[in-house]
Image (cartoon, rainbow, N blue to C red; front, side, top):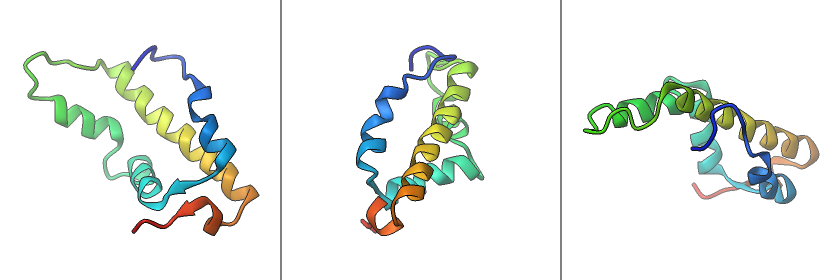
Length: 92
């Protein structure tokens, strides 16, 4: 999970270069972004009963949500440059 205040943006370069993502993956990421539960909420709930709680501290959970937003931003760039049929691999 690394540093909470730094995002290694080169990790998402393959997505920007290829501009292809599974539709199911996009839908899951988008649902984390708009809710009703964000990725941080689900992670918090999942780890709530862990005996070594907290597994992740709050800044790490907030970083997850920020990073989901960054991935969606890259997908938006792909959609601005390409048709949805080229960006989304329909696996549903």
